Image (cartoon, rainbow, N blue to C red; front, top):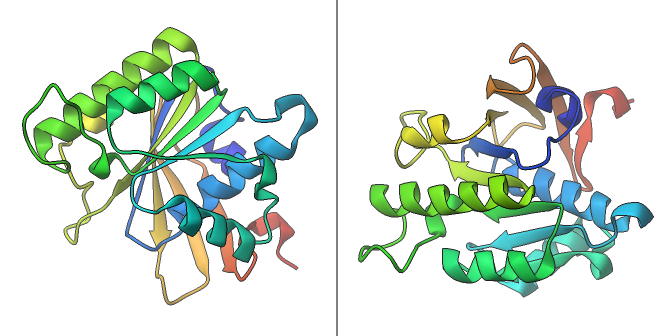
Length: 206
């Protein structure tokens, strides 16, 4: 389901922004994706999950709760974009996940994380890195009560793909919609069910 909404898979150097309400399942689907890549022999260690909202222990607990093989998953707890880029340069992952862009900041701007200027500049630095290295990048963005991505709308113009994760946290079904996609159609909708083991694609729901 995820591959189909993306347009058939990830493009090297592409930047994907995933928006949605807090708690809707953005972190879960990306953690599952990163872990699935890490356990594939041909892609072992090729995904780096950067968390700015949770500690390493919390991510490990989430992976254990979802029964994910976290022993080969690489996780970095960091919010400074310069440090993140240095780690990416050292690790050279095929995929990097930034969760979330609202927590990231750059030393070049003297303001608190989450502000318009910090989000815009941090996203620009990460986007340049992705284009220069070929690393496929996922940026997680929370949605405000008004239904828009927290932070500047300019983020949607900076990235290649914008996906929205929708549903009610109190209900099991989730929908992943394409809002913008430079590499595929935006008419696809992915249907998932949230279970104790994480998100399950609609085609796998009995």
